[in-house]
Image (cartoon, rainbow, N blue to C red; front, side, top):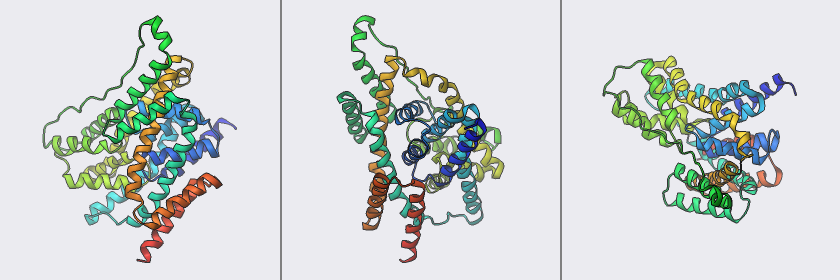
Length: 378
């Protein structure tokens, strides 16, 4: 396949996923794995896991960073840029439409029917992805124990980033304990995100400040996309005084009920504050750090497996990543499987994925259609 053909394939795949990827980062990872590992065979499950581990360890939107890494893996630096942009663009445009409706009517359109049918399918997609990836991530009693312990601690309220770092260091130290006797220790890298710089309350609106605020958030935000709520509340409600708490909550809701990354809540905020230019500037600001960080770390990813230290670190991070995704899935299942129909829909979707290897895209369409029919018949 020519370089141009690979680039067009990257754009096509991620435009499609950006249009259909409901359900948050965990569901996005499931759909990505189904598309690029199982169906298109761009890379192996182990390579996919290694990229996922790297995406989990750097700040920013994990699923978007995963898309950027996969785009670069398939089509070089052009794939890095166009792959990430293709994934973000559909969600940005859809959110801008919601912003227009919100400004015009002062409320959000009802989308319960869509979420009702799509969420159970997303639960099935995540379960299938975790099941398949666990076959590569669990390499023995050590990684199995690390993953189980991480899942337990996550259920008890432990933070995602401390778990990822601790799991990676634990597996690395135990697997290299013979080297520790000779070398006396191992170097480790811990990525920390600092707080945002306080800004005076009721600051006059400007596009430059809008870009800088979202750039800071995108550069330091770790963990679940829902941490975004706390960052935006601090920056835009408390520090700048540009939004009310209700507007902030509405922005998060839009990010949840639309496909693509939750970070497109920034697009909604940008539209409310500065129209179409504001939406574009806010989107660019919050996602640009992800492109920069991936471009920096990407050249080092293949070398990590060649080092016994970093290879073991990746093993630990990978299995903890799956544990965290499993924990998120449990929470998503609680709010998604709410009656016999949604439970049956999730079970049927999982059977279709495991037994018949059905394309997850069609399952998303089917879930949306069933949701529409269910609400029409009420």
